[in-house]
Image (cartoon, rainbow, N blue to C red; front, side, top):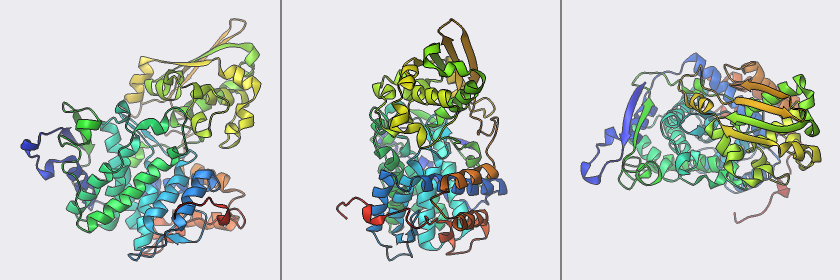
Amino acid sequence: MINHPVRVYRSEENLAREDQLAHKIATVAADPVAVTAEVTEMIINRIIDNASVAIASLNRGPIVAARAQALTHAPSTGGKGASVFGITEKVSPEWAAWANGVAVRELDYHDTFLSAEYSHPGDNIPPILAVAQHTGASGKDLIRGIATGYEIQVDLVKAICLHKHKIDHVAHLGPSASAGIGTLLGLDVETIFQAVGQGLHTTTATRQSRKGEISTWKAHAPAFAGKMAVEAADRAMRGQTSPVPIYEGEDGVIAWMLDGKDAAYEVPLPEAGEAKRAILDTYTKEHSAEYQAQAWIDLARKLNREHPEAADAKNVASVLIKTSHHTHYVIGSGANDPQKYDPTASRETLDHSIPYIFTVALQDGTWHHVDSYSPERAGRPDTIELWNKVTTEEDPEWTRRYHSLDINEKAFGGSVEITLADGTVITDQIAVADAHPLGARPFAREQYINKFRTLAAGLVEDDEIDRFIAAAENLEKLGAGELDALNIVAAPGVIDLAAAPKGLF
């Protein structure tokens, strides 16, 4: 890996194109380096993972609306169209990226990478797959494109913080998906460069989508970035250009949206001929909740077994969670969001409330992607009583470990002190989720397939489940035009297209 210095340049400094970050990203994307077997295996895992959470969301409001929008846009003339999860109809690729991107993100249940910024790099898959299906690409083409998407997003996330400036994390997804599409299609460096610039320029938005009363836009934000990436690639292929330099310009993204004219970053990117391995640094979710909640659900389940008395609100005086800066200020009591303690709050808000999540997991000893968020579950009087006794605070050591670049000490958990009414104090801690590569039960292919089968049960017929798994595991051998096999069709009666809301299209 090479660390590339990135700063703001005055216009008169005339930063050479090859020295611009977007051009360096494009150069990495155009590198014909082979994808390793280990990375290929993980890409297959994440395709299965994305499909599982998309299927579980098929009849949730945001997906129903996004699918209805997509279905009004027939395949464009440049290809055969792309598939939408759950149905057989095909649509134009940018709209497939939109519908499938919403489905993948809705439950907040797929992979994650956390460093200087936050990300769900699996969001790269819907737009890259949609373009691959539309253009008749092969399984190997798709693998190469996805490897690039993950690489670029993870590398940007390692180096450039967006949330500090209240810019939503999908600003790293627009460029990464654009680069991944460039790799998939075998585009030249200049074309990818222009697509990356447009992919960034069109996807910078504020973090209000993840603050306060969190709306359905939370699921739409990455889908919008994926849709913009598809359109950016199309425009760039037609010779249309982007603002230059998009990152480093004196009126560019860094100067006015991020750290300003004095900014200085070191962005790691693979050198020429170096394999793209960033996907191996990422991790998926066993539970449907914000990633920082994963370890806390596992710890709460453990405490439920070992200290059942702590699950009864009447026995508990207080619960103090000591954790990282991010967990405290974004999903903890440090956010100062009263909605995080509101039993009538939306699912999107509750899955960003560590006090709620820890309380329910502690009381139930389990976690369910639907039942744990139901209004009935959130409104239980004993849950509300215990929930309001849970607070968080930042611990500098857990913050340091959260930001560590050493995968062996990087942590997303913390410690908890449960003070009982009789004065007894129960303490415990956890560094990473059980499903994390360094956790108690790391996810491997078996767990990804089990997650898919569990979430697809009752929604997809058994033969279709088996067919999809076989196709995904055979990805390297899928020939040109065979990537429709990665779509999943719901069982008869599961989706009622006629019941979708009406709009303009």
